[in-house]
Structure formats: structure tokens, C-alpha cells
Amino acid sequence: MGKFPIADAELAKIWICKKCKGRNYAGAKKCRRCGSQYLRPKHKDIKVKK
Image (cartoon, rainbow, N blue to C red):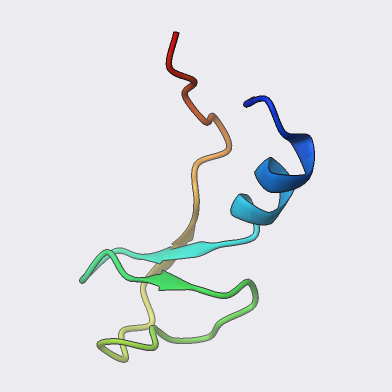
């Protein structure tokens, strides 16, 4: 996790479209950009720069 747990929690709510890589809100049924129904949750492991 990163330095800011509140920000990490908000980023974890995002869904990513597998077709166009667009960001969508949590609970979305289809992509807002391309209309595809193939969505995945954003990866929980957020890499931190050292």
C-alpha cells in the first residue's frame, strides 16, 4: 500500500475495462467509453516509488 490509506481505498473502488483500459466507477455494468461489459477490478497492489 501507499503512504495514504484513504487515497488507496478510493483507488481500489475503480473498475478497469479489459477492452479499452478505461476507468469506471465501482458497480458499473458496462464501460462508459466503449460500452463493453468486460470489466475487472483495479489491482489492489499499488506500487510505491522508492
